[in-house]
Length: 183
Image (cartoon, rainbow, N blue to C red; front, side, top):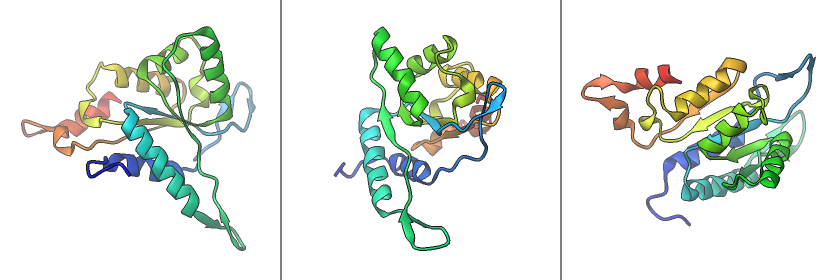
């Protein structure tokens, strides 16, 4: 459907999302409240998003779980793409979508805006899935985003993907350590 050059990252991300299970409940305010999983996908282009959506559909159709009885279809996390708009109506609608949970492909700018304006609390975020790990450097946008999240929600996960593993090694020095420490 997507041709020979389909990123394997999209399939790996879809597999991760289809099998994702929360590791711990998130505490909202003083009481412990059940909150649906909220995962943000950052640095994914339209083609990668379409591939992830395609693979999630396949996994949803074929993934079953057995829990003390017959096989039942497992509910796979929903995937949504957030439009790039600063319209007040769209901003409020975006916050409503987040409350329902799911996985959202979103731009760095939108996510930072929502976090800094407190429209979105880091405490309700399950984690980030970030593409192009080979491009992540200290003091850049993704690093700042992860620090915002981890400052208030240390239990949130950060999962990074790359198609350019060679990009994590620069002039013989492992860049993986530099990249990981910046997150």
